[in-house]
Length: 632
Image (cartoon, rainbow, N blue to C red; front, side):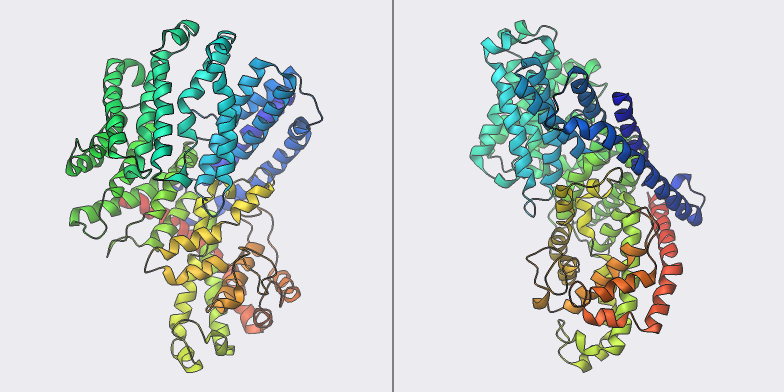
């Protein structure tokens, strides 16, 4: 019963993931899309409540440290974890739950001192910690949780690798030997050193570890001790892992000598793949191997930049547009990303400018379709890298447009949220300018009331754009946002709290969006600096604090009254929200916002936005996605 119920949690979580981002291909127009989303999120609410009951009855009792787990408990937890996350696959449903069960299994196994059980538990811990490290890596250095997960995973890996010592290895059974050997080859790939980029000594140590994993296949002792182990697969993956860390145009900073060593292994990879083509072509395309080999050749100086770029341009064309397998994602998404990393933004040819726009739009469309195919979560780190290194092309897709369309593709409810917040923000700004123009004095470029009145329309335009961009940092925490199936843990709330700072840092990178960064950074901070986040943000010191106060109010207004994509419950009324603001006036909310919301004319305009504006925004989401299909 326990196992069956926990597998039910997995099935419901899968359904929730699919419901949260329906494909427009199956929709009969804008109205059908809006209605479907509303119905889906009401269904998500039902599924989430059922998941909560499952966890309460069958999962949390197993997490009780005072309970001694029996064999059935251990088997049940292991199967539950593998159903949600497999380190060798490209998708996960709930990384945090996997990490918790893995941690519990390690603690229980260490108490019992049962070596086979401990090895299996440590194997789970390495995989779970690796997944958590990859996810939180995107939040570094705003959050340093990734370092903690990396260290936990490495600690588990070190314990596992102690069993490679010959005397210990001899005593292991076939399953335990396999777990130790597998971890020997992928430990460095799982735990990147983002805080040590460019560190020659660290890169040398990691390369040495990967080389040793490769050499295990050449050691007659280990081959004799594990005759049933797939040594060809081990060799192939070990070679592949040696080549992978040079991604993003060698961002990790391997030296020329190190790149030459990696290039040598890349050539071995190519030869080994071709010699075992029938075996490995079942899960890796030849073009995928070629990408790694060509990158190694280019970085080591054996291939020209022009040849390398041409190879990456051709790679995506090798795939069927309906193929969403792991290697197809590599070819259709990561190859273009690698191509973008080689460009000089200051000197782009007409063809390069065209390709940049084509790649960005193709990426957005592809990501919209991935939740249905089960590979979106794997690519979120690469999405973060695209956002961080986005290339502005005059006359091409702007950073603002890219962020908004990407949000629409990955999580339509968040896209509708930012559109609605922009509508509320424009409405509130327009009324506040009429009643209290003096509040806007001090904003950059507006030193007098006369300047404020003369520039009112520009201020309103600024307000709308700032509101549209206030939540772009959420693109770095998509997994947490779409965790509808259970209540969030404290650490997950902590990750959510990183999105204002991450969004601000992204906006500061571009001339066209830099002026909106402070609003993004401060939109969750309380008016009196007594609460909210980030705690380092000083509301009083912000020259555009009135705009921060307006967006903060508009953000809370939409969150309180919406029923889709946030709480999947019936939203509050406008009157409920106004009462909330009155109670928080002078603390959470600016007093002038509380006063503004009591004005009948303001309330009337806000009701219009509530009545028809949000529905219009769901229609806009549909048109955005429909437009992607028409232009690709």
